[in-house]
Image (cartoon, rainbow, N blue to C red; front, side, top):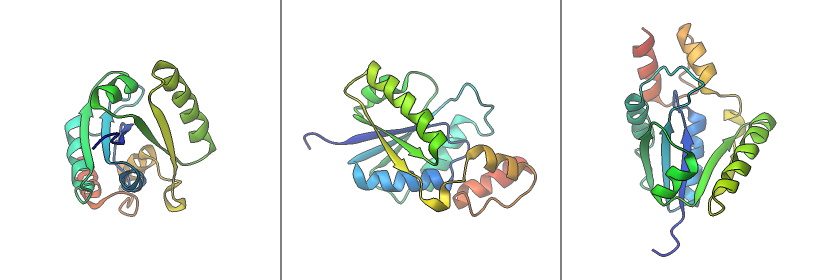
Length: 162
């Protein structure tokens, strides 16, 4: 298929939330292929290993035929996107703070590689307050995070923090 639209959705996904899943589902309707890139965020202490995050994302997205999960430990997002044949980056935006942060990253990415475009998908209202950091905090204190994460992630959180 000429001019195949391939998007990379990069993130640390620690853990993968219903907000992430909603973004992937919506992106899968817009692009021929969506690659969820599980990357290391050097500013955060991860709860799950890269392999665990990959397995959880695979389970959460198994109903989507055009979604692939990739675990990548390091490298510039635009470089990895190019290597994967992705010509778009997908970013979920929950609020104005997210937008400002993501806009600056998109601008820098565009300066590094002008062939890559960033597509912002506004979070559905019911997911706009969900963050992986909050999920981990609630789960660490045995709070119920089941409304905010896919079932497989909820089970993994309970097992990990038991």
